[in-house]
Length: 206
Length: 206
DNA sequence: TATAAATAAAGAAAAAAATCACGATTTAAA
DNA sequence: TTTAAATCGTGATTTTTTTCTTTATTTATA
Image (cartoon, rainbow over the protein chains, first blue to last red):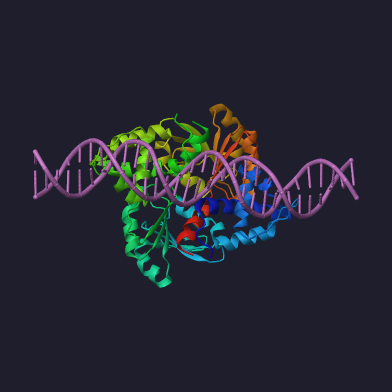
């Protein structure tokens, strides 16, 4: 689909999307760039520039059609293009993500969870089974999954990542604070919660 | 402290910090900008520019002292300046964050959790008590807490946020997909997990 | 000691992102 | 109907961020 959209814009598009969902639920059919801008604390021309990317014309003095914007954003970000993934690490964070049903509507399909704790194995979370980590290579191959969401403790992050890579996982969404060492063909996305918090903290609180 | 560091740089600083922790644990005393750059897939002059911000000189042909860099990053990002916070919403995500001990070493002190589910009230998570949400205004005032980490379901996000604001919460770290409406004196930081994922997905997978 | 290689530092250049400014359009109101 | 206000669209400008280039320094090696 339309790729190569810069991170920052993608991020704003998802925020716009949330607002569209809210407006639709409230039965509001049109929305203007200043309304959105004020809500997000950004410039209104920024919003319009982003929307131009969606090929979605607005109407002067009226604004944009909420439904059309929502559809365009979904199309642009590939919501419909479902991607399968495993969650590796069935601790609280892994379970929280497994229960996070929004993933589905955004095109991310969690097929199963993996853990090394025998007590957790065979449990079900949100209709997804927890398997022993040793089952991962086989299931990866059988189901053709190449995305893993890594939610193990920091100490295990690198060895588990190595295991995932051996099992042909190509994309790791890394929720651990470890900076993973991976070969060039494997892509890592660091969620980096602390970085996120510190950005918040540095700006306003300290 | 040294504020107004742009988001992107703050984010990189936390990644550098993770690498420093790892090097220290491995007993490695120096590190060079190309090493770090390669690890993170960025330009090495970028790394040096970031380090210049820390007033931390390197040595040609040798690199930087790992320990010094780690300390500088911690000082710059205000790790030592402890900030107290409440977690609002004791679902899996809230519990996961309550158990996330890294928060502490990064200067974020979770004092307690809040939920409206009577079954959860009075439970302990990682030595932190879960209170009924009705206790929040009182505790906010008594403990002088003005940061809330919001992990309730999307449907409850706005009403709970309104309640927090009435209770004098000034900073909301928003893990819900809702885009909150808040008065100008209240600052919201959207964690926006889906945005994060879609950035990842758009880049490489679709 | 001389040479080569790795690296930091710092300025220049390029690229990307955000903001500004203004004309055009549309709707509502006088 | 005229006027005013709101809003879009877009080019220009500014700011920020990243990358490139060069010079200087340090260490290791011949």
